[in-house]
Length: 120
Length: 120
DNA sequence: AAAAGTGTATTATTTCATTAGTGAACTAAT
DNA sequence: ATTAGTTCACTAATGAAATAATACACTTTT
Image (cartoon, rainbow over all chains, first blue to last red; front, side, top):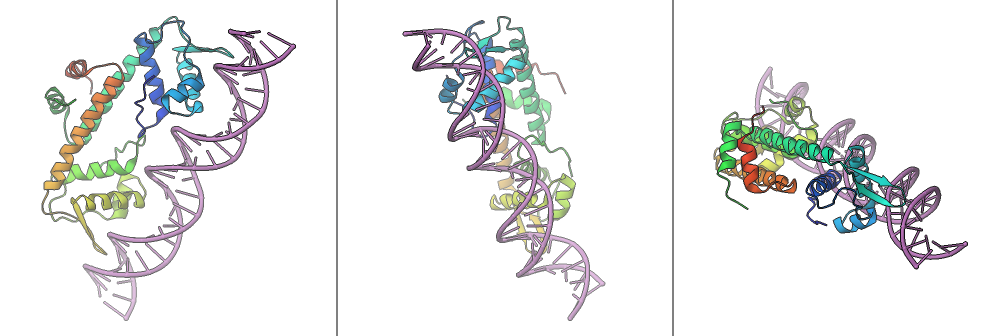
């Protein structure tokens, strides 16, 4: 799995986002079993409890489901996963515009700023 | 002063950003005395200690300076303030691109996504 | 049947930002 | 001089997030 969790903001939600993307992009196929909680925890360099909570959240959102004693599986229907990913992108973008406004750049100037962006 | 601090992320840095913008935009003129720590704290709905730390940080950065027993003042030379504001905008934008990449959108697609943005 | 691997639950501990409260040292105004 | 307002310094309390350590119940494999 990936190792690039941002330690400067809450890790739980990040794991949720990470797995949501993985599901939508087919990195984990519908019906497929995920690595165990403990395994994911090691891969992500994080506590098993944190992974557990993130998985439970994705379960409530209808992206995954769990079978006690067996593991966590990807829902056959990925509609919810796609919806949630779309929503996440919108939220992050809206938040970005808000932040830039906070820093004195109105919407249109922010758009221009992004358009000219060159960095990696 | 403004009341729109985002309670979901650390307040200290936000106050720094807020005042930095205020200085650059001339909301507080060079040489001008700022409202007292207590006053700012009330206006921002925040603890005086938090304001104090934020101001000390801006002091170290060369944007403000303090006169004990009198107050906090805006540096005559606003070069540092402008530099820091520019750096903040770059950082936030870079972070945004990283986040979108994390959510499965590569740089170019993110640019397109922003270009089409309609919301408030 | 037994063992190993799994999700689940619980409690305690740690860490960090913020809040809370107090007091001292200094400045300005009266 | 006195008073009020200020920065500044210190310690403790709070709340949220993550970690740590165990234990339990269930499934799969052997």
